[in-house]
Length: 113
Length: 115
Image (cartoon, rainbow over all chains, first blue to last red; front, side):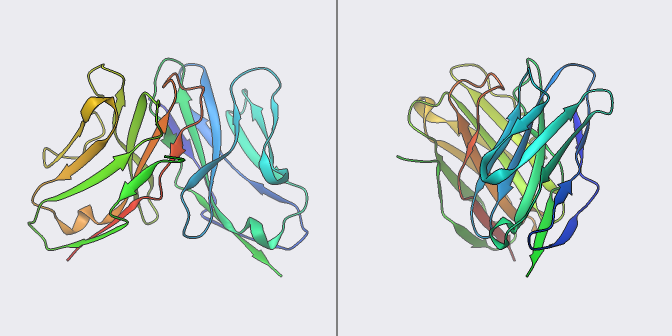
């Protein structure tokens, strides 16, 4: 079975500082990986996804993530955060041939002015 | 419509009552998912519909939960004899192919409170 672990439930970061949100997954087969973002009082939207090819994936709003197969990780990074990045971030995985998006418990990113 | 629409946005119900939550997916999307978002628990998969195939109900937490999708479009999630632990945000999502490599679009959710 697939699973996703987001170790950090809350991450406070000063504005314009870099941030890394950690995600580790477990699966016995190949996977697709996703980061979704949920802004306050809004629905989830896709930030970026890894399907195949280059392990460095760029998404919206300056975010990027790197797929590391050996470490089964898909950490999300941004070199300089803004107040508008305040949101909950969810890592998710789908096994090849399986349609169930399995989500982590989420990381609440708080930007400190 | 332009996006996934869910109704109602908020629902307060008494323990023991039945509730129905509605999801209108994006037109033409063949895959539809229901998830439950509880505080501090992440998103829990409930059920998945893909075209005319039998739905994947493996995530439904008990036989009080059921869902249907009529005409391959609108879906209704029904919770019978609601319990306080059913309180959560129920999210619906749809995607165009359901092959896993396409984006799932989420609705705003229905916040269910059982009192």
